[in-house]
Length: 151
Image (cartoon, rainbow, N blue to C red; front, top):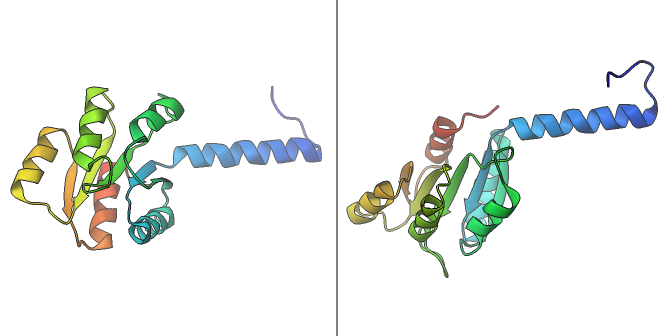
């Protein structure tokens, strides 16, 4: 139904919220899976500043179920950034679970132990990139920009 002017206060507010929600859903979404709170905060802030919607997960144990429950064809996560070494589930295990469910999301694996064996396994499972810690924040943001350019 087209809006007619003049709009009531309630109609203006509803229109503003609709525009706000449309703007938010047009921005690419990134999910960061990281058990180090300082790293999680740093990455989240940098990606938000760069124009991304950011969702945080302190571990990988429930990420697949969370994604399956809350996200579908209309609401997708464009990139998942995950640490490799976490308490319950590793980044490779998360990547394997995502691929077994045919989840097409781009995945960046971060690891302080990114040797050739880990890299080969990550790419075999469908990782889009493997970043060795420590890395430059600009390098990670550049990789995310390559995979899902900000709005």
